[in-house]
Image 1 (cartoon, one colour):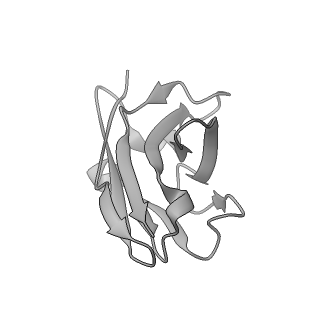
Image 2 (image 1 turned 45 degrees about the horizontal axis):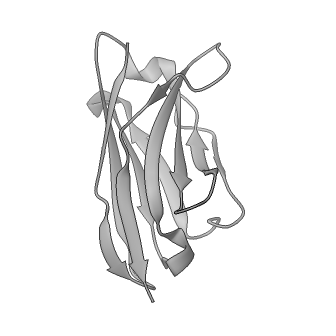
Length: 120
């Protein structure tokens, strides 16, 4: 079982930056999990933001955040990050981290989310 806790959200002006963190705990090896960030804006469906493989060597991004967001992880600290730069008001959402065990399909573990609000 993996417990995920996001932090780092807040209120920022358009053009600003935030760095989200996702701390994993439990009787698991963090490096055995592929990780992702998902967000949900008010009244909208969940939207993929970025993902990172268990090694940290492979990443992917939604087109809407490419070049502005950077996903990373520190397996020694059981933590994943999302550096968000040049934020736009449409980035306002609850951001969730998700974990998927290597060799499985579907992200089985979710955090509780952290609110990001970008003012125009």
